[in-house]
Image (cartoon, rainbow, N blue to C red):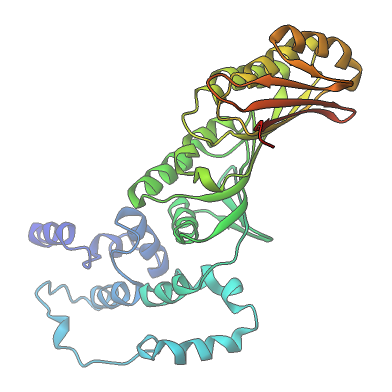
Length: 337
């Protein structure tokens, strides 16, 4: 084949000669083409047209397809009529077929993306040769990471969609995560999530996505781990946060000793953005902890030996520290309340 043809194939994405001459079946060629080029650069119908021409030995690059007779397809129907047809797929057809329709062709994808999603939880994990994304109770296994990112961002792009949880497994492929972050950056997306769970295993993943979380929608951050890791996290990460992302926290620390508990509470009391924190502490250590809290400047309240007040610097507000059999509760309060 001439070098002119080779050059034209590289310049014009609709010419799929390079995939055609690989000898693979058309669907595999199309998948490879989408991986090589942009995912939406050409739909399957267009790809199939040129593939079949090459199969017939026709390599005319100057062929003007616009002169072909126009054939109507199912996607030429009015959207409301097409929706009526889709309703025959079942009551939950939008949930059941959303991610199937998205990868048929551009017009089907546009239709599927027009369906307002209702998912409230997303979790992502990896296995040796696949990315697994769980949308509520529906688990989808992707061997193509780009396809997983396309489906994910199609859901995350809805501005009013609020997630209860957005989670990552500790074995998530880091290359996939980086590609996801780049895509979120390019789309300038913000994720509405009410709750997320942090530990020493998944922190590196969540750290990359913190800039995309909408601070105003985050209700509680649950933090679990060893006393050393949680203590360092509070001291080095939460206290340096310039927004209110960590203003509500639940700390679940296994084998927490009095010394580390005191250090954690001391750092929490310096966190001006803190609104509420629950610290899971063995009640048997409360006596010594109370003594340590008093040394930090907290004042016991009257006859309530379980409640302390700690003044917040440069504010009329204070932290109420309440000792309970279930743990320690720290809550920001105003003197007017």
